[in-house]
Length: 175
Image 1 (cartoon, one colour):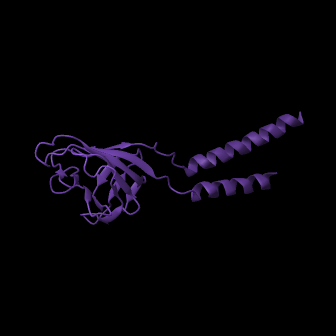
Image 2 (cartoon, one colour):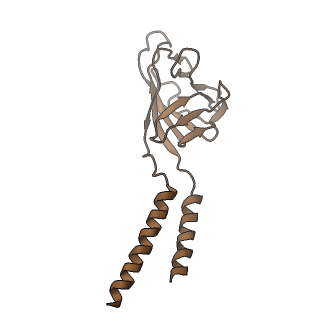
């Protein structure tokens, strides 16, 4: 019985450790400070999919524009990652799911650009086509909940509890 239990435990633990990291989705938005005359200060917004907790290189992340001041580029998918301006991470997401760094440039199939970056102005400096802001930041709001992170100590505790419960069950059924 103990051998079967340990085998099942090792297989379960291996499955949890080998499970793929969950991709996170966010809604993003910024208010342009520059753009076509007469169309500011409307919001530029969209979604971004494929971020993970920790450092993100930028590859495999897809951004879609859902709103612009003039309606241009709405529905456009940006999935071609060019480079991070500083040569570092494109995005960093902390353990709570907050985007703490954005420094990435994406382009669409029709060569329109979407930039999330730190730049020389401090804070996030987003730009989509003619809409640019240097005085406010991009807001990233999680769409998908941040997944439960597996803790090896918690896993050992759960396995120990199951083993103890099994021993107690056997002891009580003998009486």
